[in-house]
Image 1 (tube, rainbow, N blue to C red):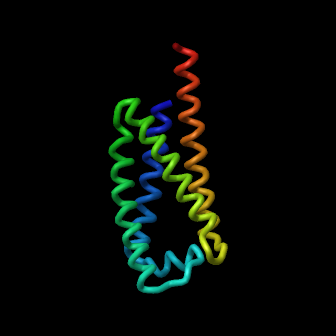
Image 2 (cartoon, one colour; image 1 turned 60 degrees about the vertical axis):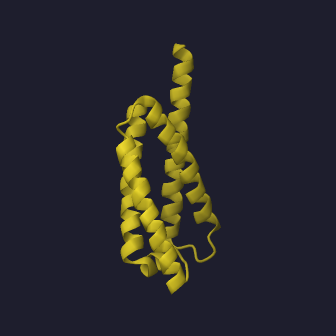
Length: 129
C-alpha cells in the first residue's frame, strides 16, 4: 500500500508544483480562472500561496521515498491538506468556472485516494497481526 501512497504523493507533488508556478507567474490570470476578482492584494496572497505550495510539493516529492511509517504519516497530513483545500475551493466566493470545478474534483479525488489507501493499509495490518 505504501508504494501506491508513494505514487499518489508524487502525482500530488507535480500538481502542486504546476499550480505554484501558475500562482507565481500569473496570479491575476489564476484568480480569473477560479472565479476570483483580481487586485494587487490578492495577487500578493496568491504568490505567497504559490511559494508555500512549492515547499509542500518539494516535501511530498522527497517523502515519497521515506520508510513505510513516513509515507503513511505524509498521507495522513495530505488528507488534512487536501480536504482543507477542497473545502476552501467549495466555499470560495465567486463564479463557478471550469477550472474551479476541476480544482474541486482534483482536491476531492486526492483526499479520497489518501483516505482509501490509508484505511486499506490499516486493515491489512490488522489482518496480519
